[in-house]
Image 1 (cartoon, helix red, strand yellow):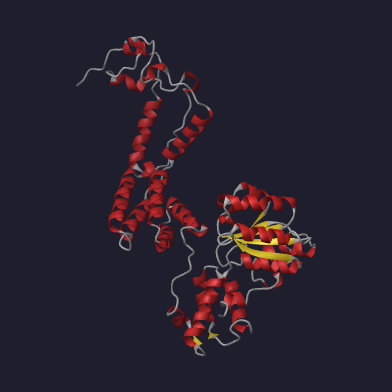
Image 2 (cartoon, rainbow, N blue to C red; image 1 turned 90 degrees about the vertical axis):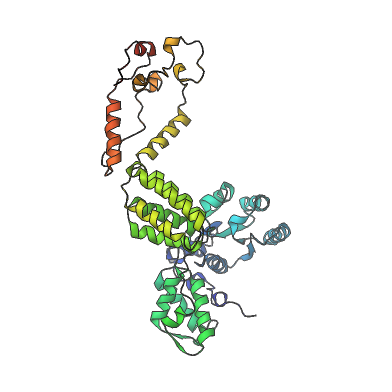
Length: 427
């Protein structure tokens, strides 16, 4: 059975690698490592199809040292022990571990002592964010190197090389530049994806001249890389929130569409609800409530029709006045509660002990509630809530006016004196 095109044409040396000049170029860290014959352990992280494993193999071949390829998903303990034993027979050796973030604790415990002792070098390859997916033990023993998606021009260059290569398509595919650019755009920087597309073109059309329309008949769905287990998915979620926060409704719809394409409705719903309260908040409280109603409708409808209420709430949230006043206030309060805890004043406790009746909380005197001091004396001037004075929301402006009125009131912890005041007459 023939290997896929991506494997047949993969670079054998760092000089053959397309793109990633910050790693493999003349001033790149991997190039310098090879020139000085000074290998080191590293984690190569980035989206699928960007060349992580290819770079690792080429690096080892340029160094001219023994290396072994393992996959954290399929490798068992016995295979790891054998590979470790083999590598320890060499003065310099490398274990390249694909999907390194999937190493369980037992495998990590087996691997790490040898890496720390310098018995071999570890090159981990992963699509996940290493700061989130890898434990500190691995991160502390390796250097983290990001492998970024290729540009459209770099993907096109890789495709042309594969088409011309005797190991690749050997010049048998005839495809115009417009079609190649279209394939590169679909790939979203994933060369492996684009190589699969042109290989399908050869199978489908043979010696015909392939144009963009013919490519579209094979593949029209962009390779957005929005698998909910991949880092790009979380980047899309982040893009959605930042676009809504910045009131860019068109960008918000774009990132929403990417997430809808992944089919992960749960992530979309959770994020939109957070956005509603965190970024819109008091700027448009009604929009926050309508967001909840829209998400309830999403549960009842399901995809594909669920995109309609999702679009409704994304549009309203993006175009609404924004206020993070309440969000920032609670964040500051939580931080203070963690670092500077204090005792609740006796007259505010649920069951106060040894307190005179005149000093107890006046449940029957609502006219006094705004005059009572609720923070302890040493913290009475602490302010968590900062009004959004530039708010465009009439509701928030009204709340700010009431806040200013309340702040003008001199509060007291002397409840007995407050109670001595005559109650306001009811009209």
